[in-house]
Image (cartoon, rainbow, N blue to C red; front, side, top):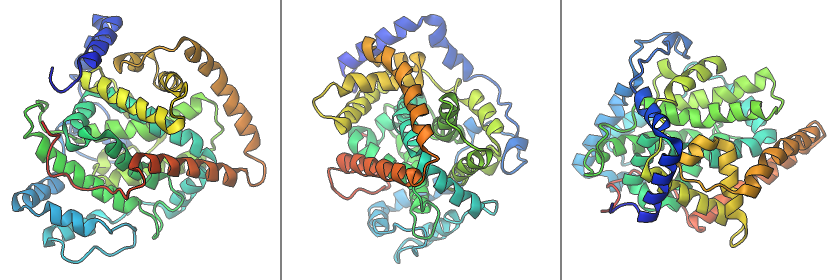
Length: 405
């Protein structure tokens, strides 16, 4: 095996053997399940009901294929480098077809609710620590147990430099979770549109890789699967931890991710309208898309190594990070990802974390606590991003190649 180290391959094999044949077969069999989620449960309320595995982003894909054929992607990246704010005009000099597409793509949907978006920003003030934990280590480790996503990351350009890849992913995640996400001075629209362009480029490029044999990557279902590893996973974990969340706050948090899904190019007929619809969709798409891969094991090791370095270089933090990841995603996914068991921390974390949540939630109603919590969370976010980028300016760019051979 040339692309993945022998040690990681052996680790993956050991994890597979521990699960047993039935567990290994389950994800592959699940992918054959018929799509039954009804578009009546979406924000559109209607739709064709087509299986999202066979639906992509037709307009963006054709556009990026054309831009690549014309050899203008480097120029486009240079022009878009300083396009940063939601209210900022597109830079002059962009190809006309790209400009027209981006002007349409940057518009919020008609059903977007400014009041809910603002409430979601306020929700992040007091719940940022849980959201950062679930969307960062939690969502990242879940993603490495999604074969399509793990292989797409590994064999695309970003897989060759995971610190840069994680930094750019963090730019997107931090934009969604920021207090001004969809305000004029925010960055969420920009990061969503740039990410949509990147996805379209990867669809074209990966099909040219000798290592990619999974058809057209990043289908509507692939994007939905990733979406469910973020807000749906986070909300389920917070409910599990008994974090008190009012109905209006829960609805607002869902709404910010509904708008984000739309801007990423997910069709409205696939975007869940309620949490019940989101849970039902998640229960269908995650089982049929998750499982072990050697690429996922390799990526997991890199991600946990980065997390350990971010928290406390040279200390006992790697065993703690291993246990934290296992606690967040569960034993099955952790075993798929080759995460070592940590006898001490694996026993302590499930006992300690619920107590810490209860202690923290007892403080939230006090004056200024949400603001203080946000300040601490934001400082941590900025530190992580500074660490990943080595203090260098990093922005989402359209790739022009796959992972180097």
